[in-house]
Image (tube, rainbow, N blue to C red):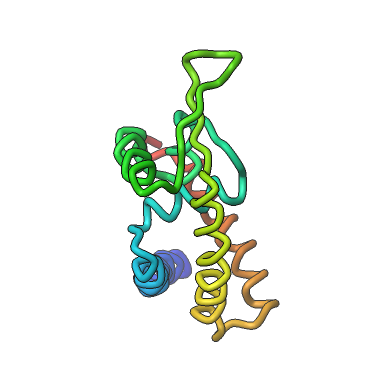
Length: 151
């Protein structure tokens, strides 16, 4: 019987986690849209803002989007004047994405507001609860990543 309860609780956790992710994600996306960006554009800009210039080939893996979408998103952000492509001086096959001066200025203006909004979304949790949740969700994520469907 304990196994059945474990299975039922796992299913309940999956539903609750999915709903929480959707609720928080939807609110965060609405915050991002206020700045005239879609979530993928914001993710690229946020990566470059915090990590600096990044090879185009690595962006998809860092923000969890398909590599085919990167070119499209980078093109859009380049047209908006927020980022630029920069050839690697040591390897012609590598192209970096980097924030332009306007892109850096834009992120310095909007990121603090977005950051505060994300904090407000999570205000129902204490700092200690947030820290515990980070640890537990990392553990859950790593466990899921290591699980083999073909067992």
